[in-house]
Length: 427
Image (cartoon, rainbow, N blue to C red; front, side, top):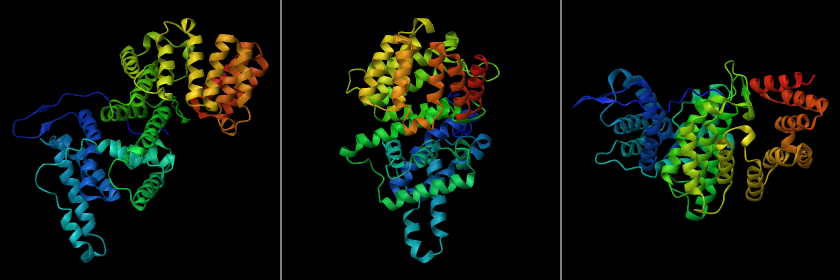
């Protein structure tokens, strides 16, 4: 899903002028617009309904702010400015429709209202639920979340998915039509449905993060813009539901994995496997924050998959060296994960831990149990893990063949280079 314009996560302090707009650096403006996007959209949809029209109006308001604020300064109340501009765009859109007389009354009701704005305290969570409703396909959920909640433009999202902007515009339009046809109002789902919908929201955010951390295609191994955006949205979700242990664990997992990002590649962008990374380059602040979040989540509710995965990531991050990694603990945690959230990818990862504890032949035997899985046949990771375990077992010919198959099966250029070099080293 490569190609979103970089998301800046640092905050630059702004200086204000009494009685006038705030002079704010461009990086801070980007941050502010991304933060305000869901709140402004929530205000409009809560006030007017019509998610699709409101979302288009908010995007136009964000673009107008991105053009004007760097030179004219940020207004004293940037959210009110965006709400007003978006509301006017919405009014203009309604008034320009062909059935002018039939929509005249509707346009009047859309005029910006005086008085205090809704607080929008739950708007971000409501928007996430709306964008991640089960009637939408996974790609549509991803795209709509990045646009409505992340504040990204259609062009940025199209670049992320490696598709033409027109194609992405059609995908987003279909998703909004689906929401409109579903008749779902702008409100949190009923309590019985909320837990299931929250799981979908978490899954969408984790998919965004995963695509950024292990880009499925293209010249880059990772996309810091996508991982940063996923972490930002996960923080936002955690603020909305601070007592949900799996949400805290998801954020912890992202931080614990992202902490290793800069050490995953060398100067020319080539992949460095976990065991060979310079751990002094890992981000200790992210690790400490992730461990703190995980510690707070442990024991506060039923054990969930993100909690277990975060625990596995923490064991890796806290090991002083690859040789000192507590593989027996990791193996035990994968056993728990297989009970909580079984699947071939969990088995694939557990086979590595099993090999590190009981030898490569044990890992290969476990790997054989998922060889016929249809989903695993579509990913290069099965061959990549098999190659690694065969190499550990001393089967250089088998390992070389498996590395080459894995290299042919991935569209990620850094992974292709790494796997091909591993194969060449066994010639």
